[in-house]
Length: 70
Image 1 (tube, one colour):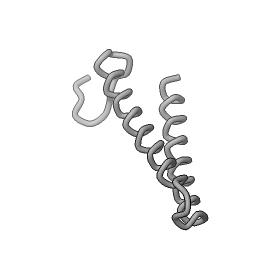
Image 2 (spheres, rainbow, N blue to C red; image 1 turned 60 degrees about the vertical axis):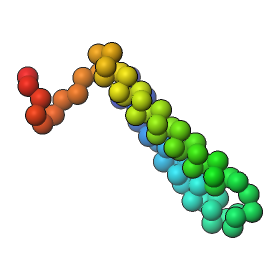
Image 3 (cartoon, rainbow, N blue to C red; image 1 turned 135 degrees about the vertical axis):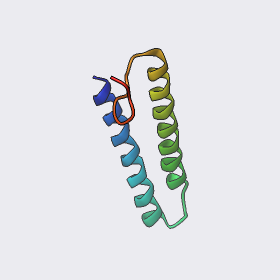
Image 4 (cartoon, rainbow, N blue to C red; image 1 turned 90 degrees about the vertical axis):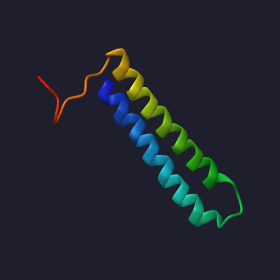
């Protein structure tokens, strides 16, 4: 469930990045849709990073990989 939540947030981040690109090409600087899409992307990225750090500190998720003692 935790993995699906992280993947869903990553998909939302990519969606907003694509929306920002699309609005930049279509609007040609006439509206603030590009800025709004990129602001949402940054907010989602910060929220994801903070969520992962908090979950790791609370013990809800465990990191594994290179350099970890078994």
